[in-house]
Amino acid sequence: MFGVSANSQQRPPVDHPDGEVLRISDLSKIYMMGEVRVDALKHISLEFQAGELAVLLGASGSGKSTLLNIIGGLDVPSSGKLFFHGREMTAATEAELTAYRRRSIGFVFQFYNLISSLSALENVQLVTEIAENPMEAKEALRLVGLGDRLNHFPAQLSGGEQQRVAIARAVAKRPELLLCDEPTGALDFQTGKLVLDVIEKVNRELGTTTLVITHNASIAGMADRVVRLRSGELSEDRRNLTRMSPSELVW
Image 1 (cartoon, one colour):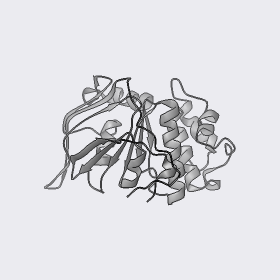
Image 2: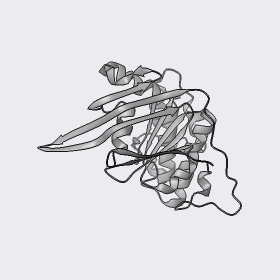
Image 3: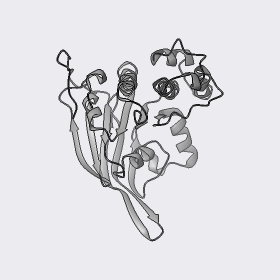
């Protein structure tokens, strides 16, 4: 369960008047493992609005990472459609999907995937050098609270700091969608809350539509919206009446 400290201030959920960014229509994904059929996703239909912060909950094997990979253009569904600003991405060519991932999607994974021989600044610059309209790498690192760690290498940073570099790298290209797959999974409780605070800050200050996948139900308190998957099916889709600060979460 998540809780709230006695002196905390709960905030109303954010209203999102800018319209639909993502629409998922009757999406299914089937894997064949030898002769065994695995229905990873079963007829999922969802919409996500501009600037929304959504938490996607589910146990291991619920289909949440499969859904995130399809949204991010890393995988394709067996049936159904995915629309980004009304454009059907499930009908896109491989070149169009590459452009979609490069221009519109920022990924944050459980493991940071930093290049050990590059500094924090250089890791972020890898993205800014290929993006169309990036923010300065230094600006992205300042946004995540690492303005004084620009020249440190990953081995000189804590796990939480490395994850914040990964977030800076993801947002430096100014993506419309930030997709976070278990971003606190490798972190302790206090460090995890700091990382969630950075994700919430990016959503609030940049207006980036943000999807956070997690098995940790306590994280749901920070979201505008909570989506739960169970055995590949949509089992819950609700809006929070109040949106909590990550610092108020307890698990």
